[in-house]
Image (cartoon, rainbow, N blue to C red; front, side, top):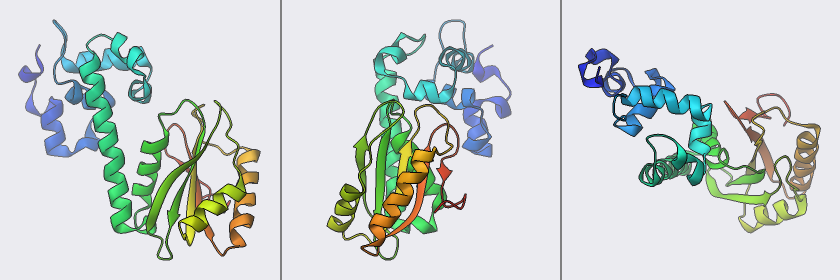
Length: 224
């Protein structure tokens, strides 16, 4: 049966318009992105097949062009469309942060950091530099590393913070393994960074770890 023959409340597009995007399953959201299925298969059925193939929505969104285009019903046009959507999401969250101030929008901060750092297959350490009212001055990826580590140098972080005339910072790095819990090395470097920046009266407001699920906040867990 074609999706257009389904009851209106079960069709992904109509369901989204009536109840909001958060009411949809991963397969339903993906079906709206796909728009059409393949011969004998609805967009929702194709979306479910793709999620089974990739293992999760995150894995599909993070796939490189070769892996993406090998899948049934996908290709370079869909890959380009997806990359455009992801980049628009990044820019949308950055505009929210710049307009509203980081501390006034913690969920936008989380969403922005997740959008920026989730797709990497190696560790990236980055920083949001903030003014004295905690508004965003600049986002910078400072260090890149291997699959499970990135060398972070407090002296270089302090230098960049002074260059931006920052009054506060929020750190973020990703865990490609998908596990958001901080390691002892994560805790140790956060303490070293706090000590280095304290010499210049620059506050460390938080350190987020981006992995699967909700980004981990050091501040929320009493580690800042």
